[in-house]
Amino acid sequence: MKRIHIFIYGHIQGVFFRANIKELALRLKINGWVRNTLDGAVEAVFEGDDKDIEKMLSYCNKGPVGSKVEKVNVKEEEVKYEKGFEVK
Image (cartoon, rainbow, N blue to C red; front, side):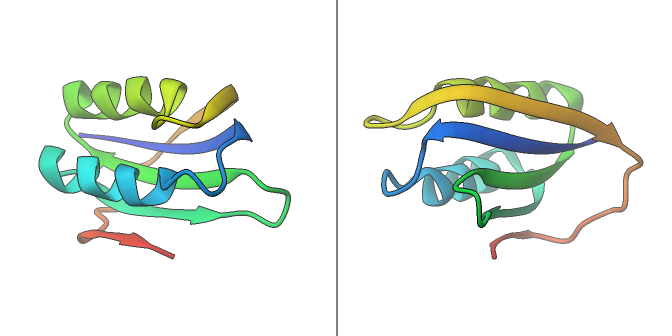
């Protein structure tokens, strides 16, 4: 079990980034949340199996069609046992 807290930067607003993250999280059985930040980034917390977290991180580094990810900051944190996945 692993928990990461990430910030995604680039052209990522208005391309359904958060909705796609939620869909993938539900498919991979990852718990946590995702939201837009005031500075135009996307912030997310993911908890799940290491291999599933790596798949999610790989997706976040490329993003959906129409996006242009410039940078992803990742910080590993202590697992807090989030329940479900939500868009905040």
